[in-house]
Length: 231
Image (tube, rainbow, N blue to C red; front, side, top):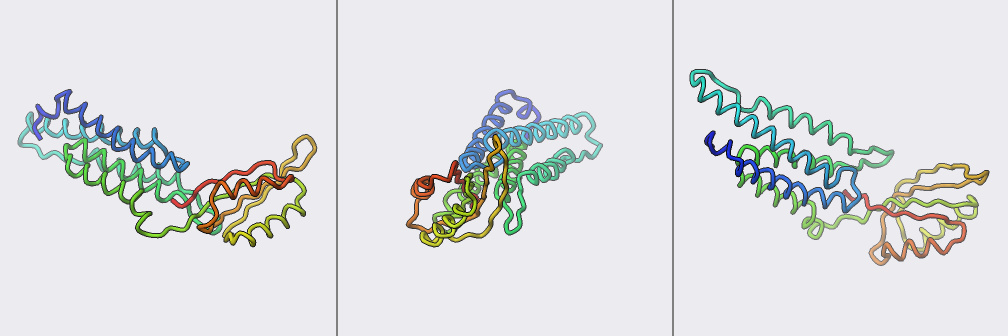
């Protein structure tokens, strides 16, 4: 990679556009699945990593041309990217009593930073093949390896005792596996509103729409929210 090539506005533009494209596709997948780090976060991470990598390469070749007798570290600015993204990814990980969520999103952020480094240094083949590997891991592999349909079901309701019995019968009748339960209560205009957050495994014959529609038939249930937490 020559200094003249690196400093070309066209080359810089191409690398930044590829960073936006690659990170945008990955980020869209995460945002579509309601993950804490979505489209904008992935794009910003990749653009930042690409920009820092180009700065590092420019400084390296500039110093080599000016002081050929001096040894210059070509990766001094790149190492902090890897560790820094680790801290950002840690913010997407949520630990509960029985499970850890957000690991895939944290890994996608870290890999997106690696894509940015590859693009910034001009290794287009590495960046392209890595991007394909990420897309394969996030989308195609779920059709090859059977992953349980794990959901987080949040329900707001009144009349705790009666509704609790309804939940027990409903889950048993529909063969819904319950792995975690969280509970809290709030007062709204002097009225107690209860909230249960269930972590569940849905059977194949029960769709998301059917689940919400059947739960909504209970007059004591005020709100139902279903979120996928497979990844």
